[in-house]
Image (cartoon, rainbow, N blue to C red):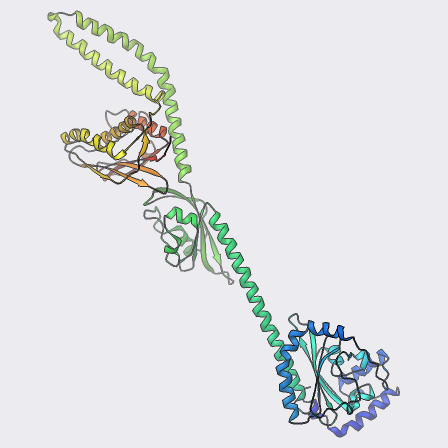
Amino acid sequence: MIDRLISVPHLNQLVMYSIWERYIKGEIVDSKNIFSETYKAWLRCTEYKIDPYQIKTNKISEEVLQTRKSMLQDVLDLLEPHIQTIKTTLSTHSETFLILIADTEGFILESFTGKDTTREFINVPFSAGISYTEQSMGNNSIGSVLATGMPLAVIGAEHYVKDFHRWSGVGSPIIGEKGDIIAVLSVIMPCGMESPYTLSLTVAAAKAVEATIKQNQLEKNLLATGKALRVLMQQSDIIFNAMSQGVIILNSDGIVTFFNRAAEKIWNIDANEIIGKSFSCFRRCPHSKPLLISTIQMAKPITNIECKCRNAQGEKSILVNTSLLLDEKNSVSGAIGIFTDVTDIRRQEARIREQQKLAVVGQMAAGMAHEIRNPLTAVRGFAQLMSEKMGEEHIIYKEFMEIMVREIDQADNFINNFLQLAKPKPPQMQSCSLNDLIISFVRIFETQAFLQGVKITTELKDLPTIIIDKDQIKQVLLNLCQNALQAMHQQGTIIISTCYHGTENEISLSVKDNGHGIHQDNLDKLGTPFFTTKDKGTGLGLSISYTIVDKHRGRIEVESQLGEGTCFTVYLPVDEQF
């Protein structure tokens, strides 16, 4: 098609004119002797009832023309450098030519002429605002391009309207971003003065404009996509950072790409310190490999696995759920983990369990204490009376009576402890220094420890003032230290330490020994009345300690390893008012 101007000799115009005359007269012509698109166009012109000897001009007003031009101003601006290139190229062959730009309804928007293109030479209307559809002008290099949707050359007598036989025209559609024609670029020159490069030059200019339009649209789409992506990322950040669960995203290499605020709080680390680095779990995690890493390596999500881990903040209970991230090839590209800190929930559940234990014992104590104490009181009174009445001759019996009184007093003390579980005294809160309380306690208790060959050391950090019942907390400290002392037969060390946890706004008091330790199966039973691992223990000391700490709105946590020792840690809230 592009070589038509070369393959159609100028002398053939006489033959073409003869065929045109016969067709106009209604004679049958052999369509094989005519370019197929030309013959189809003549059939359309016949259907439109076009007068081959008269041009019907359809022109729009200047105002409408300017409106139409403004709608295609971007295309006109893009065509401007190409128009100059076409003019320069055509001028090397002829200075007589017309370059036309039309819209999708065939109206000429702009026209450019060569230096020798005079109005006297032009016998057809080529001015802006004229419609060049096939319905108006018959087949031509604008209307036929709009009718067929492809580049065309209409040469001399191939035009249906005779006044156009003096001209040869080439046209190319300009396709927009939606795949439809948005304009037509056409070059008109006198028949017989055609350049063999005109059609290819016109098509190249149209394609260049199309490429620029697509490029501009791609850039707009890219900007719009980038903007939408930024908005989506901002929304994702807002949503993820508003979540109470920790959200961590890893790529396929296990590198952290996202770490939300809740994760910062759980891990006690700033996101900037871990993003871009390999993910590692807590310092003490029960799993040899982080579950999020296992998710990537096994290509399998994990659901509702609870881990008890420990970091600098203390023991944490974390509920873990993970999901895989897949790329366009359905390959694993990473993983996302949702970490729910259920530490407070588990502590509250443990606290409820302890309260339930104490409630049962309290009910039992309340029912039994008075029933036991009343006869014991009578027995003690009679034993004491008999002891006073006995003379020197019954000295041995008097000693027996004194033993009875002491044993009854010991039983009464046991009952008092029972009653304290049933009806604990409300704490008498006052402001004090926990470190000072510990120092004064150690001065008294270290003598007892020394007799057993045990050393008492302290590691006391700066603490804020705390509001507690000094006597009750001292009792808790005494119970914990006596348990630690009894866990070591000879030699050993008891370490009493304190620390302030600013994030939770609480103080911790730890009593650590290097005794024989407690079996893991027994840890959950600690604090239960009458549960003890000691031969002569009652378990009431720890039960009372748990009750006191609970009344202070605190908690007790225990760590123990067989053969290594045990550490009881009491956490107390730092309040301005209780």
